[in-house]
Image (cartoon, rainbow, N blue to C red):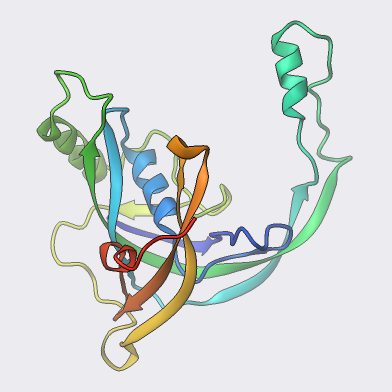
Amino acid sequence: MKVWGDYACFTRPEMKVERVSYDVMTPSAARGILEAIYWKPAISWKIDRIHVLNPIKFDNIRRNEVNSKIPASNVKSALKGGEVSLHLDPNDDRVQRASLVLRDVCYCIEAHFEMTKEAGPDDTPEKHYNVALRRMRKGQCFHHPYFGCREFPVNFEFVEGEIPGSYYTGKNGGEKDLGFMLYDIDFADDMKAIFFRANMVDGVIDLERCLAYGGVS
């Protein structure tokens, strides 16, 4: 799957107030894009490789954000019939924050899916493979995927033949250490964050190879 867009922000969790993006798309962001196109409880997407096609470029922008959110306790109280306010006026609570985002991004995602415990007798790998393939070819999605923030939409198309060449092959190729990156959130273990050491070789981040060195939580 080839995905591209004008801007992207894969926020580093250690810099959450002033948003700073990782150098490349995180595996969890890639999984989110595939899930926007096709997902069922019976399957779980696994990212194999991320191809970085365009040169990594950053832009500084300023964005309007809302400073607070409705407390979860208010929502719980409302669900129980309590008289609490669920109103939030963004005009009264707006702040402007700087963001360091990626510009002109383009990636290819190599992935597969695995069957989960939720799979029923009618859930076969062939069935889900064919449905996912049809939706990718037609450009269908449950909701429009985005690069980290909803204002950065993703364009996507299914790659039938060879994966397009990367800027980081040939004279720009070689090995590039991108440091520790977020791999994914373990929802089965109290939403524990899992990080890994991202290593890009000739524009390709091979997740199996990177995870062979061990993830850290």
